[in-house]
Length: 204
Image 1 (tube, helix red, strand yellow):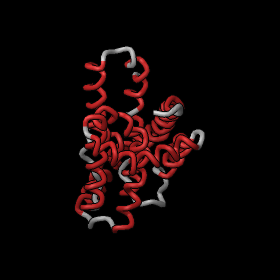
Image 2 (cartoon, rainbow, N blue to C red):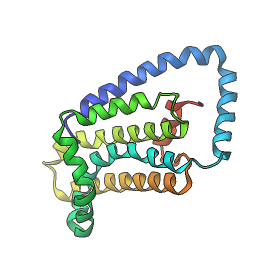
Image 3 (tube, rainbow, N blue to C red):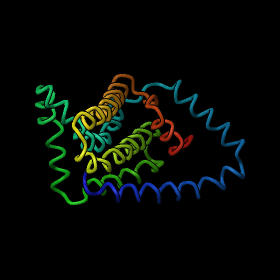
Image 4 (cartoon, one colour):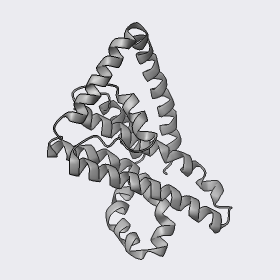
């Protein structure tokens, strides 16, 4: 994770507080109506036609952010499987190098995506994927914060823990890309992250 991780964490806290302040009065004044609307919208979304292909492509672009931050957790796997390392060097590494060459680029992209995820001019399908990509990136902050301390630990401990993070991250990225491109539906099966994205986006 780059140096902007702590700034992103602070931004998350501020955004969450702002979101709660905006939503709480609405829920207290008309909670039953919102709950009925939410059930209707979610049912309609699941039964609706798949998203058009241009929307599917747009929906996977935000995942470039967690992809660039999470690829570093695969360093031990790349050592054991050089083919995967070569694929990473030709695909993810150029993106990571581009981000690192621009100061605070990840933070700027994060803020921009945060605004887009709340833009009602975008389809809910795209906004959901934007929010889920942001939450995946946030989830990578916590193992990255412990990365410095892990340098003093034996490799027998660090390697399995790092690989575990990478497996979960890689499985999530492959799932959302495959689900979006293949089915054109909201990928809601990532534990905790998908539910949090659902709550942040709301019923509309």
